[in-house]
Length: 285
Image 1 (cartoon, helix red, strand yellow):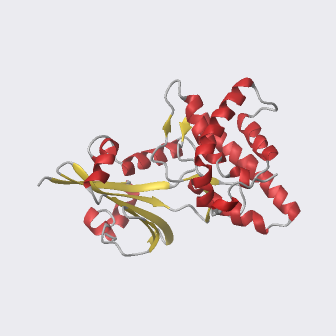
Image 2 (spheres, rainbow, N blue to C red; image 1 turned 60 degrees about the vertical axis):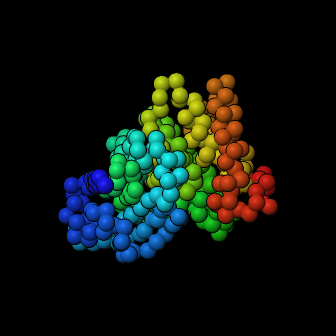
Image 3 (tube, rainbow, N blue to C red; image 1 turned 120 degrees about the vertical axis):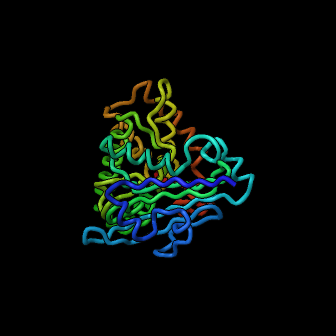
């Protein structure tokens, strides 16, 4: 049967990844180095530390595969047969974010293996964010241990910086479309610098789709927020995001659409943040 393999590695990493067998599909899928940080029936994420240029680099190796014909069929138009595969789209999105001056994980390599033109396996390698803390863990755990005055100061700074970061991204007409807390990474222990990860759906919005695209990002970001932030704080975030002192009719329309998105995601995102279903209805005052 016809078999094909395609691998792309950024030039500055080709030699180092070749030394470790991280530029060949077969070797990658038997890779046991590092630590598994996430896995499912069709994917695995492995954390690997490599020396390069005299210092250690943390890499994340994502591997995807199909187990059944049904899984392949469901993804037929999303790279399994037609269109670009997920790993190639995420690689391109991360590169685009960086070109736009928006902090994102650095993509290093992607590859696919096909049999009879059908996608069987794929991978993506990215470089880890320095001193990473996912936003969900920071809000759930980091804020809780601060004294009351410090908590208020950090909460205000977090709202301001996250609003500025979101405005910067949308100001470039780029939408993430998986703008969940877990995909926003803080570098360090203070909310000063954010990085984006997991962006296969990221894109420049299409003409006429600005409102809907922005609403999706804002809604997914807000989904778990009522459990942790007061309504006044969420309003402060939005006003900072639009860089205005008061809401306009256009703002109210965008907020309504964002809240509709948030409502459909809230319970699932609260579970991801670690809030039991029984507590999901409680909100910050």
